[in-house]
Amino acid sequence: MKIAFFTDTFYPEINGVARTLKRFTDYLTAQGFSVKVFAPENPSEEYVPSHIHRFKSASFFLYPECRIAFPNYFKIKGELEKFNPDIIHVATPFNLGMMGIYCAKKMNIPLVGSYHTDFDQYLQFYDLTLLSSFLWKYMNWFHRPLQKIFVPSPDTMNQLTEYGFSNLELWPRGVDCEMFHPFYDKLAVRMRYSIRKEYILSYAGRLAPEKSAGLLLDIARNMPSQIADKVQWLIVGDGPLREQLEKEAPANMTFTGYLKGEQLAEVYSASDLFIFPSATETFGNVVLESLASGTPVIGANAGGVKSIIQDGLTGRLCTPHDIEQFTEAVTGLLTSDSKRIQMGYEARNYALTQKWGKIFNDLISHYQQVIETNQYPAPIPAKKEA
Image 1 (cartoon, rainbow, N blue to C red):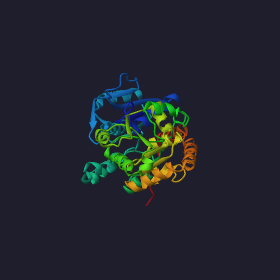
Image 2 (image 1 turned 135 degrees about the vertical axis):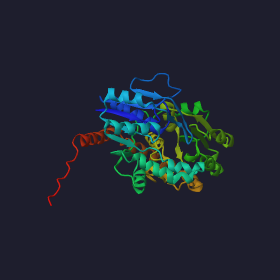
Image 3 (image 1 turned 180 degrees about the vertical axis):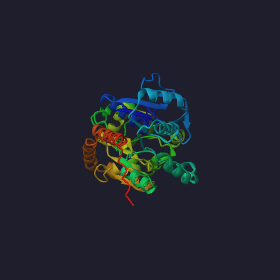
Image 4 (image 1 turned 120 degrees about the vertical axis):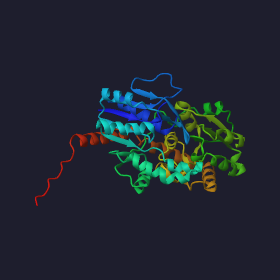
């Protein structure tokens, strides 16, 4: 099978979409499939592998880590003719995604796509809610030609169904339990960040309004002094709110910038709790990574996160933006070591069941179904004689 991907975000960009697509394309290559990726250029990338084709790009204003590419149709058409893909997968609803749909139609190539980001939820944080109706019309129009649309969580599937989307299939996320585990040297993390406090609370993600990153400060300030004095926060990530948050943050909050690989895994492992207040996630990769690290998660009872956290078993789910609930959940688990430790065991056990291999193989099966449907279309019913 030969698969062509069209995406406006890809490794080495740091976001859930880019990381998932990179892991999937690596898996396909390792399994002997042929892959082509059409993606925006990335200034930090020194070497571009031959199967990735980059195009000049600019940052998207709502999400600067996602870039808007300026693709060359004739270059893409030439590459597709040489590659002769069995299927095209579009992953983003921007220029390259549209180019993928256009090429699939022109060249009669089976077409699927995936829905990763709930941009409608983002609008409220940028005073753009008036655009909501237009956005959903566009998203319906963009996704209509796709023979299957892969969505990351049941919540996203329900939402898209309500907005009239069809051909939806669940494509959840897995986690690398060899990379993310509870057994890192916790003392090394404490020494690296000069932590002497009894407990470590962490967050990982983009520091932006749509991630409710500002709530982290509210939660920290709202904690009882006898608990707050024992806590050190590690805030992993970057984004438009970082400068403001650092300026307003309490003294027990350290901002690390973006971390990846073992450095990120070590922070999860060394943390007593992971706090994730975002209510706009279609999945929440960092939540699953924390659970794999044996660290319970306190998250918002919304979006894809609520399908990952088992409330009371692997963490706590709180009403979005409810500072009191988040504070009570943090305080309750920090004052009950046995409950928190048991949650950590359950979290790890759950994560061990979320295997990338099975998830990717299920997706490949969907590809095969679409390809076979195009090779052997359903027969046209014979007309009844008058």
